Amino acid sequence: MFTGASQFALVGVLAVAGSPFAALTAALLLGLRNAFYGVSVAGIVRPSGLGRVLTAHFVIDETTAMAVAQTGRRAGRYAFWATGIGLCSMWNLGTLAGALIGRSINTSALGLDAAAPAIFLALLWPQLSRDRGLVVAVGAVVVALALVTVTPAGVPIIAAAGMAIGAGLLPVRQHQQERRPG
Amino acid sequence: MSTWVTVLVASLGCYGLKLIGVSLPESVLAHSRVQRIAALLPIAMLSALIVTDLFDSDRHYRADWHTLAGVAVGAVALWRGRSLLVVFVLAIATTALLRLLL
Image (cartoon, rainbow over all chains, first blue to last red; front, side, top):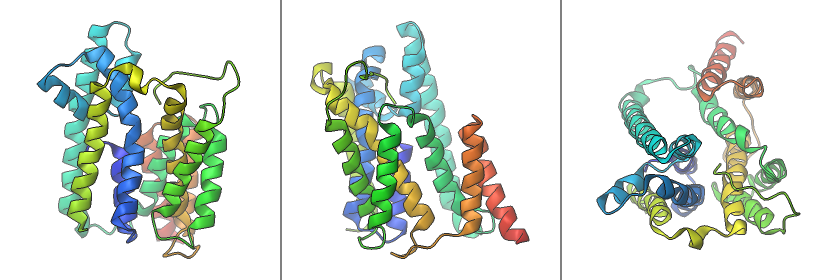
């Protein structure tokens, strides 16, 4: 799996002994946006055959953003592959290092318990400016806080996803639609 | 379901979603409502993940103020336009330092 938010969510739910199904659902819902990124990326990279299989693996927030930010298709394609190969190798080397030495580090003394929420916040921050973004975020916080003591781990996250679906289904006033991968 | 099966199924599922995206004709996913939902999903789920990370302790509300302070410093850094790496380092350093001193 190469899609950070899904990986963090999966690990996060499993780490607090949440059910595998809750963990799986959270990871897949967070990975859903990659399908939409894939459409944008396919338009720029135009992969075929085996290239499609490899292209798909590298479709994430960062590679899509880099690809669509370029002016010509050539530059976009270069940006996609450079970002994808660079990030994927560093990301997995980092994961391997964590898996190998993770147990021998005192995560609490190093303040690493603040790492996950801080990273989630950093991923969330630029998206709040999106139409309805702030409302959905506040709603999700309320839903999660309300459910956290009464439902199994992972369920508050999935219930919060329901907020997003509800907000997305509501009709839009004119001039508010935007088509930006985010 | 063992942890490894969960990891494998989730990996295949997440990869499958990407493959669908690069393979399907654009018109299939081009509905504005569907796109809006896909864009709002991470916002809602990341918000919920932050809340459960910070306040959930085995189905009881409990927060560690060192961690809260670290994340708050990270939030200030984000507000000042700092990058993810800076936010990450500031958050864990603040938490570690507070825990060491107080």
